[in-house]
Amino acid sequence: MKLRHALPLAIAALTLIAPAAAPAKPRPVAHKVAAKAANAAFAVVSKRYIAARTRFNPTEATTLGEHRYDALLPDISARGRAAQEAEWRALLAAMNRIDRGALSRENQVDYAMLDNQLRYDLWTDNRLQAWRWDPQIYNSIASGALYGLAARDFAPWPQRLKNATARMEALPAFLAEARRQLDPARVPKVHAETVARRNPGIVDTVTDMLVPHLGEFGATDRARFEAAQARLKTAVDEHQKWLDTVLVPQAKGEFRLGPQLYDEKMKFALESSLTRADLKARATASVAAIRGQMYALSRKVLIGRTGAPPLPDQPSTTQQQAAIEAALALSYAQRPPRDGLMDKAKETLKQATDFVRAKGFVEVPDTPVQIIEMPRSSWGYAVAYDDAPGPLEKNQPNFYAIAPIPPEWSDEQATSFLSEYNDYMIHDLSIHEAMPGHYLQLAHANRFPGTLRAVLGSGPFVEGWAVYGEGLMMEHGYLDNDPLYQLTVLKMRLRSVTNTLLDIGIQTEGMTRDQAMDLMMNTAFQQEREAAGKWVRASLSSVQLLSYFTGYEEHRELRAEAERRWGKDFDLRKYNDMVLAHGSPPVKYVRALLFDMPVI
Image 1: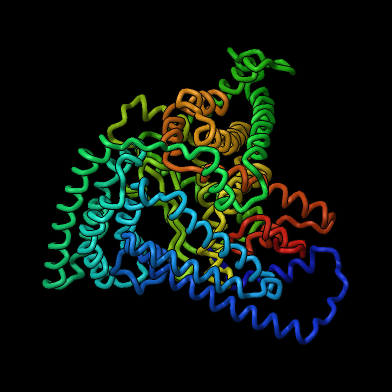
Image 2: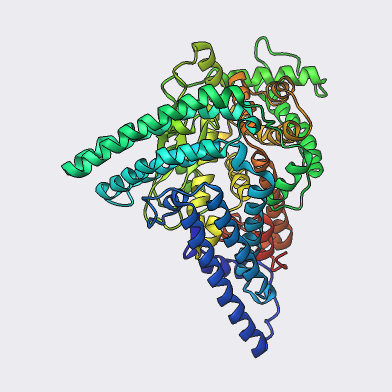
């Protein structure tokens, strides 16, 4: 997630865009000495944090590109949590001894982000206690431990297979410890059922991604691998039995956080000045505005068509609904076959990339991107995701992962899903996940000179940029200004807004499934399969769904402010590249850096 050479370029660009400033006054020698000492002390703290985080979380270390711990698993016992808590408190104490005001401006940003993350981690373990009730934590570690070794060619296969063998040997004890940590009475039913479905994916990763490369091994190493694989299969089967016969039947926990915990988590996760009430008010207003835009486009599409519904200048709610549904139905009819999702994603990614290069409104990276089928262990959470290489990896591909249609779905269910993810929507999905969305943004971020910010990247910055990127494509006439494509972009934006209302409603206001489905299917025009999946996702997580609307609002407002401040000197290419030159910090810190404002 990061940038080696873009920062100097961004600073140079700023001198071309921003109004001329008065020459800086020389700083006193004492200030320079204090700044040098503060920055040196913070560099020590940053290095210590990265070292501790990768040591405590070996599976995450693998994905970050730190491979010293590739044979290990994290200690998820009470002892392991205590050791981690002691280190986080020690780091906070060390940070309190640093004069934050004497730090460089970039280090002031990193200081604020690290302080927030350390406090968030302590809150999660001690206040939220997710380790006690969320089995997804342990399933994610177990499946990621093997997937992270197999997915990218960061080392020769024999080395990776040896480390995978060591992790397979450790996984039976890990799964047993997970069972000891979880309190079934506190586990929500939806969490238990979801992990019960995902659990077999641990073995699938071995079979599908590791076994085909056993030819790289000699006889001794292969025998050890196969013995570890057999023991792992037995352990996963045992864990499955526990999930099916103990955890799922006994799961009685409440999946809703409630207002107090939600607000506390939101403050840490978003690092934004927006409150829950602010977000709900903004989202409610945005729903009305976006539906108005969708109605205007629908009139454009439907006027003159046989059987079109009434299209008055001032429609009633019912007339607006009917018109938008009728226009969207035209896009639903253009969909890939059941087995054609991957091919369509590849086609749309190439088309979007060619378009961004041609328009030149942002620098396009040359790092590789691959479209892959989402591993089974990740099914059931999102339709697609972007998996960028870690900040310590070099020349590794970015993965744009897409979930296949489950084989057990009926043709009716598959049609519902593909009506949602029709040709236009797959265009927009490729834009959001890859170009100029996540892939492009994270490739820029990976150049930033420093690992800490990459590890602490802001979800709202990342997700908000992807939604902003969708708007950039529509703004520049992608697909020849096809109104059905533009209608799809607005539908996706409406989804990001209703994600906020959905998350707040479910987690803090007791929103029922029927109410949530009505919001998604009627207010936001989502198909039944998409809405049903989002209900599960919103039940399995909290606050993350706010990232899209929060981040988009912040990116939108930041660009508007830059246009006002810089006037005729505003240049979109330079602005976008400058925003991306600082990694993935909260947008408020990018604002401070762009406009030379205090970092607070």
